Image 1 (spheres, rainbow, N blue to C red):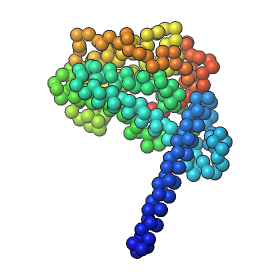
Image 2 (tube, rainbow, N blue to C red):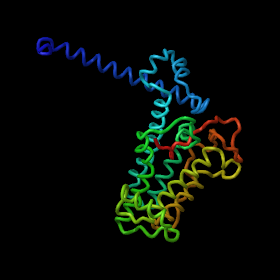
Image 3 (tube, rainbow, N blue to C red):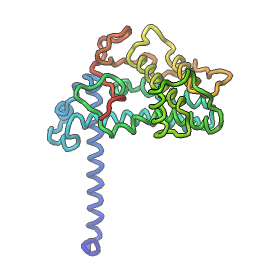
Length: 290
């Protein structure tokens, strides 16, 4: 009734609500930006809500209305990072829709690697060392799956076209087969269990290669890191059973987005090539579950 008598009142309230939502979005973005800066400088284990509030000129009590705890803020940053690398992979998959299966596979892998070397601290947050006392909630599972699902999509499409061969390796050990059958039922019932096992192994190896680069293990070992990665990713695609091509695409002229990146150290790692001055306390999140 009030809205009928005073239509301007509804419009004013809508404008106020929209302004409040925009202000909240802007403050949330500012909090995350400052938290990412702290991650780069101090590492995830030292992330502090009070320090974030102090740098933003906010009262701690005001920041707690956005993120009640440090773990809530960490979870938001983790989900953002997984979504960003997942979006990069999915966009590459869509852009290569009409390409050969091996080219599509390599494009997804390359996009994931390029995002990681361009965002080393965010990558370290999700694939570095665990943050002491932090347990990943269920909310992170779907975002964490996006790159893997993009790779599975390549295999599914090749299988539907009758172009997916047998994966490399012998028969699966029974415990491995049990895992593969379970995952196939959940993710891709049309794919044989050996292909699922090969996909999981390839997914892990892709990010293992990326981690070697981001965390500095390739220093003074691999200089042509972009082309090297493309060659390795294509080889993994062949192991999954994707059809071979006459040649693996020449990537020598492809620009490398971070040829000599800052290499955030994975906490507790003393491998050759690590930068002793790189931020520590990086976390591994991919295998954590609530």
